[in-house]
Image 1 (cartoon, rainbow, N blue to C red):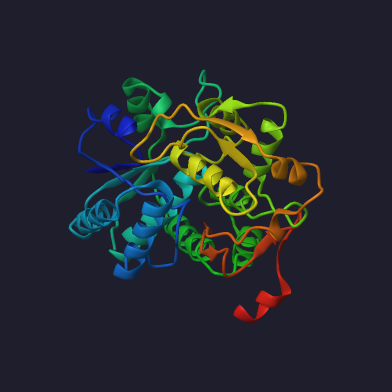
Image 2: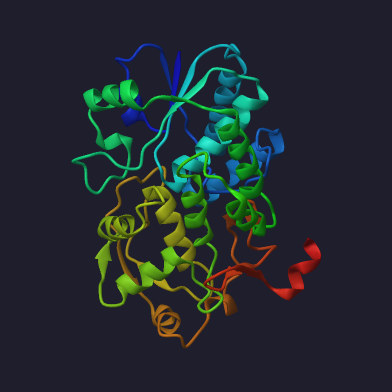
Length: 326
């Protein structure tokens, strides 16, 4: 038996269960994506993006991907594999990816433990909040076989999520039978990462400027506040810092801080953040961030620098000049 989890905390806590533990170290809510990112050119493309945005050494990223992919390749097809993933966008994108890869490799004995709440633990962010004993009880009570219908939903969901045309996500959501109980909710959360047509900011960025309107605060406090409001995202501190760095880049920075933010080499900064006058202009509707920024950023399979999708409050729309790309 092999248990696949998304973090060292959970991995260490389930070590007393039968079988081996594989901690999967990747972020599919971040960086360049396509339907098949196991190809060497995509691994390298992701590695250089992660190095640029998070300071994770590209060589380390590439080596980790190669080791993980080799491990999956060597799993016997009849080996029981248990996937441990909670409800948020971070976990559900990883679940989609792994079910795609395991299906390609014709692994036939798949199970999962997946929850969005745990009695007595509020707010519930994830499995890492639970004790070894609680996780063992979950394994005994909540482990369930993964059906062909669930695998199919993961495959079609991943295809939509990594498409250059994100309206494929809207189509997938409209047709979903929710065989994977938390995937539709996670993809709904994903759509809110597209910038608003009205402000040029996505929902996370909007929460940031709202919070900083009357506050100068430490990175850690801001991160905690946004995490509490975005409980279905599973945002990591590194990812959040990368979002804030983008808001400080270019000729029209919305934020400023007194010390470099969290990255791979600097995991616990004491940075203080504040809004700039330009940030106030966007916050109060005097300017639209679209006018000043050319985003070097990915949202699922959409590279914003090339395809300027935005959210109008109900649907995704694209700049008319971009339609020929599709």
